[in-house]
Image (cartoon, rainbow, N blue to C red; front, side, top):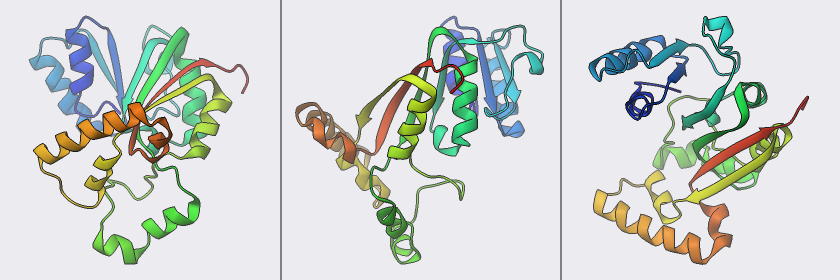
Length: 207
């Protein structure tokens, strides 16, 4: 999910050799321009391809794997099984994949109520595509099928209000500060969080 290339270009400015992939060819044109303007177009390669089928060699790249994989708000768009399987193949030995993702740890019937026309008419969904679905327990079970190491760090409890009302920047920052203290002092509140940072490592062979 390289998008407009902000993260890829920032990493290149830190000295990394970066490959960014995305399913939108037009947004990658923006990313390439950003890399050129910042003088790192020789350190960044953008590839128009979904993660589920991405193969560096097939795209003409001279390598097979990566020292790190990073994504922001992308896993909940993936075809999970195919993507996780391929991520395992793309990681170099000892490398990790890190993603920031929305989560919703509730029973399926509660998801259906949240997504019902009656509720969404008053509180619209904050999604960009019809198939978006916040990660749940079943997604983490699938991650554990493909990786020995699955770790997640929670963020945003009261900030979940942003799903229903527009919060001002000062209100957001105050709530986020409270959230961090709550999550630190009351670990059981983690399953009510809105966002997590997921770290995947040690792919399972033949999973």
